[in-house]
Image (cartoon, rainbow, N blue to C red; front, top):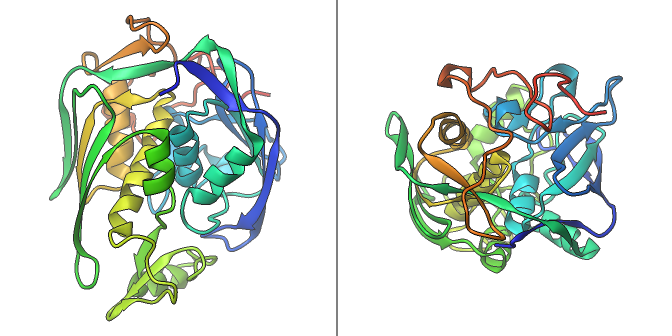
Length: 321
């Protein structure tokens, strides 16, 4: 993990199809200075002020992770957030002319490749991170996500699906190289019967074999097959990394997930940040505890309907100009 903050050397552009809307979407990614954070800005609406990529600004976790409300809402951000978190980029403005980030090939690898084309600027400011100091476990039926103290960011993840996917398990120890090679290429996946149902509901209109692994009764429908034998569980780790990145600083600890998704991912970030005693914030440049900034304190009942915060943790203005 880098001891200093990081951005890209120059602006980048990419165009791709939205998974749920099916529309073509343009994205511009711009570098930001020290202590800015990651911001998203819709350029296709009348009020295009930016919103901070933070757990307290999450508005929905069904099928994807969304931030913002009303016309400023942006969805399907988890793959880009995973790429930013996986590469340690923490000062960025992302401008999008649609309601969701493009799905590209269904993984984080195109985002990783795009960011690498710009190169990175190491900034003259220390990077902070969170260290887990107390175990926490959240459950939802038979699903659970737990975290415990650990000197590294590690994950043990298990998925369990009927039919072809079955049970898959994977251990992952984070490094930027390991993320880029082992996790970022893993594509989103779905069952064929679920695709048909979502499209009947006006969702997944841009989904296809070019941007998702589709699983039928007899196996994988994609003619090229899988990128990894356990690609599905790797993608769940990718989603977890993207959702954890909304903490606005890396969370160092050991995560154990069983059948979890965006909802539990978001809830554990919110619980860790909002409940005293689970995290301490540390300056990576010198391992001493520092005062946590931008920490939103609220009861868990506000997880999916909290107020929006600005970059300094204030309640107004909600959006940056």
